[in-house]
Length: 255
Image 1 (tube, rainbow, N blue to C red):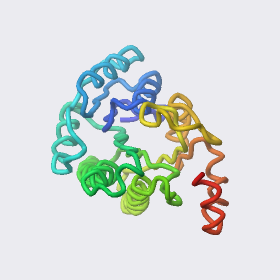
Image 2: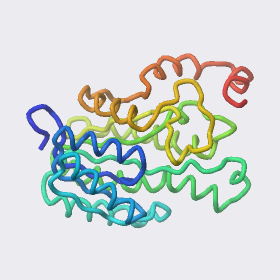
Image 3: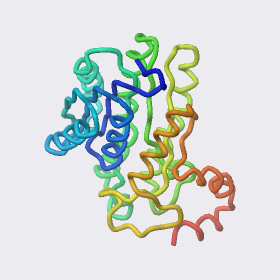
């Protein structure tokens, strides 16, 4: 159960070897998470992340290997992660994602499907199993990594943005479905974050790094806000940007 300060003590991170997930895991462990299960597709990176978690205060860590290109494994991955926690699960983080290359992949059916599967289909399958388990448990929190790219789709990233938009909207409905169950869901909508996934992309206004994003998420978890924006100013920026006429929007974002 969450400790007396409302901080999660048992955590599962799906996509646990990503730069963002690793920074968040370290901060959760520093805030007294003692049991962490990290799931992802690269065992050596998962082992590194598990070692970091112990350095920051975790007493028990474990890993689960999976490939998010295969949604049929989602229920198995969630089941295995819950079993490895071995007790009440306080928080599950879904940090699975693939940016891809829009202009290389938009005419490639297999590559386009891969972007959609990793960013939307696999998380949806995992969420179905998570909902079942956490509702049966009677409490717990789900944190889903979305993106400001989901708010208004850019021509230059419509494969990624479209998939994230589907996940973002689905999570909004899922959060409503959890009312009264003791389980909650929070969405994270970051802007551009400097990570391995975005290497080579130019910085744009409000670009942050993984450490800053993780700090914002921890604050958002404490506040219970339904949506966590990073940096927070993007909440107000997109209140305007989402309503720009399309020709103006294209000039602003697709340069």
